[in-house]
Length: 252
Length: 159
Image 1 (tube, rainbow over the protein chains, first blue to last red):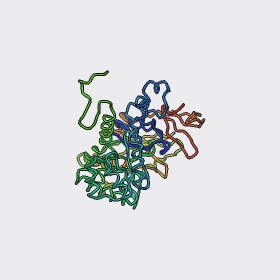
Image 2 (tube, chains in turn brown, purple):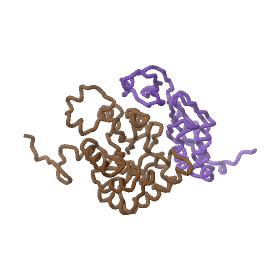
Image 3 (cartoon, one colour):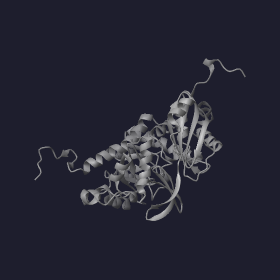
Image 4 (cartoon, rainbow over the protein chains, first blue to last red):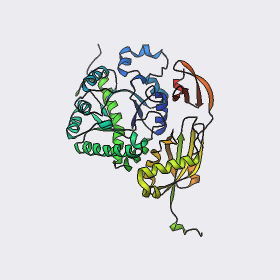
């Protein structure tokens, strides 16, 4: 199971500390949503391994962090823009470099754009701040393989009327997404290592507000599936979906 | 009062809870118990909260780490776990919290899951992001003091 976190400078905890905490909590890896916290995987590959290795252990080097913490550390980006036009530009910029691309929704136009764009992996926080979701978006998300995020952050950290509204939104979103079988991810949206919660705690909290426990676990595993798929696509053996370099190919 | 016959006594489970805070947080037993009960009351309501019990039996905290044993009625462990997960802050100080394990007796709970936190923290200046900053160091965990508060770092980040 994976968890997606906000790291320093966006959050209050560095990637290394997040990774150490997540490893103790039993996660298999973390997805770092903060753009400035890690070097993008695409550019490291392009630069070649030899030049990178003697540079020492930079705190932004995902491979060194993986080795240090013993769990997977994944570079991602969370695109947070005002309208679909600039979102489109950002997706084009970040998709070649980053392993996971998330787009922060919360606006009807942005939600619509995200679910219709197969280059986006995750539509983050679609119900946040006045955004809405419906059957049209759910079908598009399913067809384009865009994962809809269920943000458990307010469930764990908000109180009172704010939490009530968020839970009502989560329930509505859950009913739509499960009906159309659109892909989903679950995250606590932790800003610091103190906001991280172990997978069993997230499942229990989800269960208390009506989520199916296995469904929440699927949502946590889905991050790992996205990462595995995108790494496979980036690997040299991958030509296009369904076409791979086979064992009969020889190096020249 | 005369104690109950064995078959009428409530059956308990004991949750071993690990607590983590910023090093300057002063976490009291009463405040933590109140936060626990509030979290349960807000999440599962008064009825569910009464079922789960969630009485704090053991509590220690110092230098940013702590441990607790919480009593839970048998069969309500999932609600209790959810309530524990929802304790995000105590009197405004953020708290990282995790259920380390569950036992049938307090003694087993303590022997198995408690007392491994070596709270030997030291204060020293470290090089973090190109500047010397004061930090509280506990094994590989470095809580670095910056202008806006603390930044949670690890040995890996220190230059």
